[in-house]
Length: 379
Image (tube, rainbow, N blue to C red; front, top):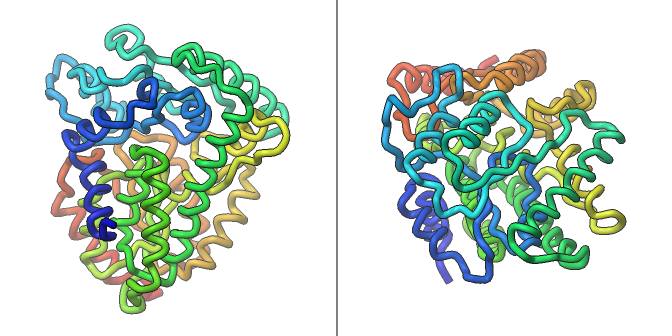
């Protein structure tokens, strides 16, 4: 059985080394009909998997030729620019198809460029609603049935509700294990926050059975690897997709421990299960619309505020670092909304606006991080 350190090293390599990740993906089990890439927590992996396809979340760190003639303009976030360059370099040629969400303006620009310039692999857009009410659930359930039809057509696998329920169970197991892991990390620093985010992010890439087995082993071995974190400043990170392991590692080297997060590839991914009784497409719609929301969804402001206040009170935080990508407008608004709540709770907040993964953190930002952690919790 591999050690926890061996498993974490594999996760870090999958997240930060494009050649390693590509080799893994090209060597996945032959039982799949192809790999479906996607960009959002609002794309239901359960439906993709039920169709015999392999769901792959597109993250950062891809080999790409930095040709200025094939670059998007600056107001588009650096993540989308990186993906565009990688796509132009043929980095996604191994995908069977790719699914776009009804999301931010930057991804909508990328979707247009995919249609007119990149073209392969073929792209599909899942039109999920931006509101969370009963009519939105019904609309999204209808879209999900159409999406399932497209995935069946793509793979040639006409899956039934029984088979869909099996994949739902498997992804519910993942979400439950991840929530269990988050609970352990609040009092046991056996994983650094950086390692935990690498583990979370690798789960967006790894084969599902392999990932669930990995999580069970790590959870089972947590008690015997218990480490106290009482001398470390308790920090929460927030923001969009945050897959820059090197940055998170540097944050913790200054005497902090990342005990929780509110990021796309973190707690928002595993916050709610799909019910398995009743109409499965309505259940999937409810799960994806009512899980912890991203800033492109119009959820209940009052409910979100109450939930967030309870959460930060339970965590006993000494500081929050909001890591945003340049030109990511939805998360600028989310930062301003959360800032008021955090200030009211007496929690120090640092806003970092950075380029996406792969760019070294500036000396200026490192100094800001070190100073922030030094004063965290003094108020």
